[in-house]
Amino acid sequence: MSETCVPTGVGPKDTGFGYTLSLIGGKYKMIILYWLSENKVMRHNELKRSIGSISFKTLSIMLKELESDGLIIREEFPQVPPKVEYSLSERGLSLIPVLHMMCEWGEQNSVPTPEVVRVNV
Amino acid sequence: MSETCVPTGVGPKDTGFGYTLSLIGGKYKMIILYWLSENKVMRHNELKRSIGSISFKTLSIMLKELESDGLIIREEFPQVPPKVEYSLSERGLSLIPVLHMMCEWGEQNSVPTPEVVRVNV
DNA sequence: CAGTATCCTGTTTGATACTG
DNA sequence: CAGTATCAAACAGGATACTG
Image (cartoon, rainbow over all chains, first blue to last red; front, side, top):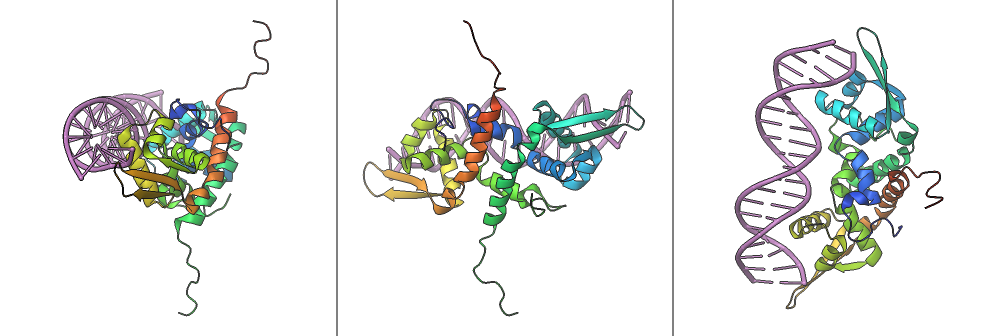
């Protein structure tokens, strides 16, 4: 691994890990990015319904942070009732491979994967 | 990305992301794993010195969690003064590529990388 | 519909002192 | 040396009510 990953004597935020984690860490950010990568464009309520467990307020905050970090794009349509669409930015898109690895490792390692399963029922 | 990444209607912990994050999230866990991957075997104090900003108590907790999650191995030598060595397990080793991507993305995206820097001082 | 404002709780991390 | 115990601060996240 790159030796510049973790220079000695700096705070966690100054490392490559820490920076990436500060953007996509937390309970829901990866999940939001995942849904946007699947559906291309989604509205606030649509994300809320897809994620389910997230609270309305938290979703708002996450979206605002993801936007200010340049990972997603927020497009507002001036109409009544209001309509806002969210989508991945180029920068956000570049994170998908990282998300992919996080997801894959988790899926392959969360269950001990027994050698043989249910040969006979 | 795998559709099983984020099944609808489950909590964040039940997703591939969430599981991986629950193991290596937090301020210091990736950094600890990084140092162990570089040095193979390290003692408690050695890790403390390398990381610097971490508190003694937090390091203890992180090491205990990493151990109970099967990512690192703790070997205790029965002697005075005590000696304990930490190293990566097979499972921990399998996480290194994931850490690598997190680190690389962070390094390549943390600074806007200006086109031209300081031609004349 | 897409938020904001307020209040509250639980978890994470830090500081300090003590122990085998 | 390698911890544990205790207290305190900071932050993430949830519940509910209100707004353009």
